[in-house]
Length: 147
Image (tube, rainbow, N blue to C red; front, side, top):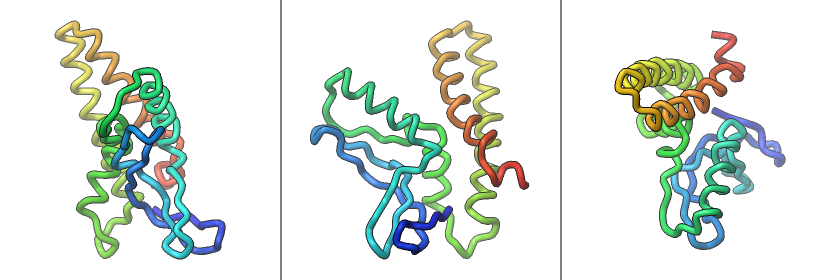
């Protein structure tokens, strides 16, 4: 995944630790990073999940480390691909992300069926939230519509 930086260079996908209010570290946050000018920005697709997490953390007054890929389903899929994918691999990162997101949606739907069968409302709500995170991305991504 690439994007053009304000300096004109291509930015690439990376994962960063963000420090929130000097007391909470949020690790594995997907960002676009420019090697030329060191500018980085959070991926627009995960910004709503990150902002929601920041609101929760501020309200709870917790301290410590949060792994963002445990909070955001999309970040988890991206991180899993990022750890093992290389640019020499075919297919492209984008098409692999599209494929893995669809696989995750199918898995979550299966798990939702299990939770529903067990009448576990809390589990069903958690799975629904995760499905919404990843489904929004798949439905709104450009590469998903072209493949």
